Length: 152
Image 1 (cartoon, helix red, strand yellow):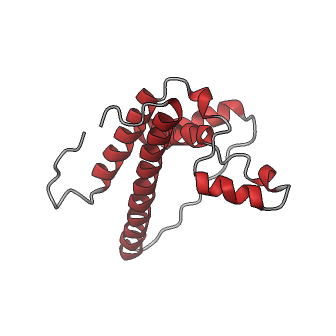
Image 2 (cartoon, rainbow, N blue to C red):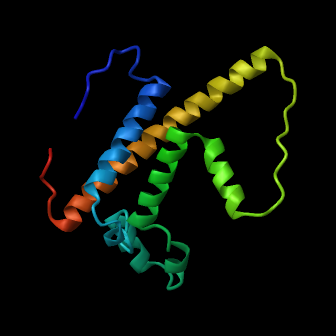
């Protein structure tokens, strides 16, 4: 489902986040049995290259399956929806290590503005790539279970 977006909002961070969350929600609704994604390579071309590489390369690429990307995309969606602080609190409950100290240094307003612009551009680019990954994973899952043309 594509919504028309005004040109001024097309590249906004909020729109990019909504597209990503929508793609992950679609992926989550489509993937009814996530365990089927285990050991399924993300790219078939990459899988063919692995077969021709050195024998131990499968150990390095063990986490390059669709299930690990599925889990990662859902985790990122939860961080965006619920906030990073909540995820950090949950990690601290699991880990009993000492809390990390956050370093804050006073910076000029211009440096902060440039730093914000740098991070916003990077975040927008990352969200676009993650959205594409979620859509690709959804389409690959449909191909794997034989419903490739449905719902389009």
